[in-house]
Image (cartoon, rainbow, N blue to C red; front, side, top):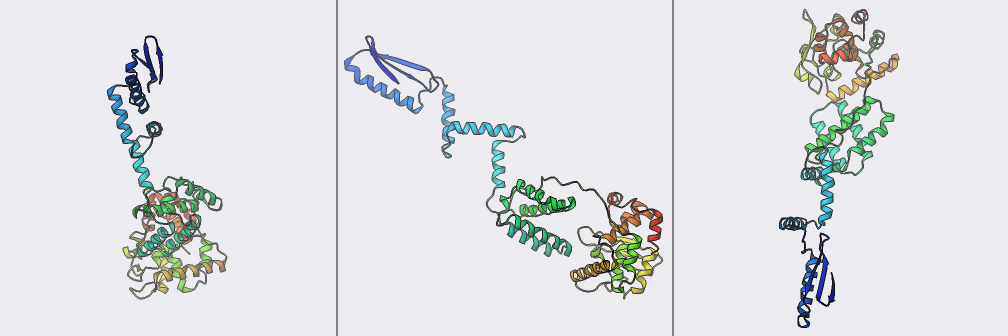
Length: 389
């Protein structure tokens, strides 16, 4: 604000918030000098407080004042709020949604009622054991969880980002086959889904990470290798091998079946009835397996009393001892250990002699899975020799 005095009176000039220049005149009157000074002081105060807005309508002024009041609690200047809102709107305009929705999502994904990764893993593992998951599954997940706890020690679940998980997975990818990489990723997704269920985080940071492509190559035993395993094998282990490589059963199913109740050899068409209590588990499903003559020949001399389990005792201990026993046998006869190799060998040879749908039903597989993994791996001539072992 600037003032000057001339012959025709006092002149007072100022520039308002919109940048417009104003001036006013006051008549020369020594007696009124005090009043002129008071008037100048009022105008100066109005200009300083932003009350002089000659270029703004009454509605504009009311909106500005309302915006200022709304921001009072945050103590963010109006111009800063406008700039930030404009940038936020630009980002959200590309994917839809409002600034308020984005704020709510961010708040939900950064909740503070979380737990450490150590506590999350411990609770998840306890849940696996209560649900009766297989020994192999629990052992595998325990190994995975130990590795993740080494990577994220003392971290809260909610604080771990997708970028961190992806960086870690690709760091260890050099030491993992693509399938193992995908297994680690699946385990991570499973763990965070559990954390969401418990309310310890709102989003799954591992869910959007890309899996690696896996070239399918099912490895199976040859007829000669199965012959080596069975030749001179301790009779205790024979049903364990035969029920998998000739009877289509999973290892866990072998550890549950009973003579007579499930394995019915004295019928015109010998079968294995895989009942619900035998097939329980993530992959198992009730079904009937029609036994080939060679399987019957191997099993009949070893059959126990009706109702007796083939392998009595604690399920987990039985499974562990059988795995160890067969591993030792493979080492002695010089046969490579293939994971689930006995059952996979059965599937590939069964698919060579039976219609695909029938083979899939006996294996407890989907038709699609059987065609993808096992069909046309073995010729019919090779399969016929296999089923004569």
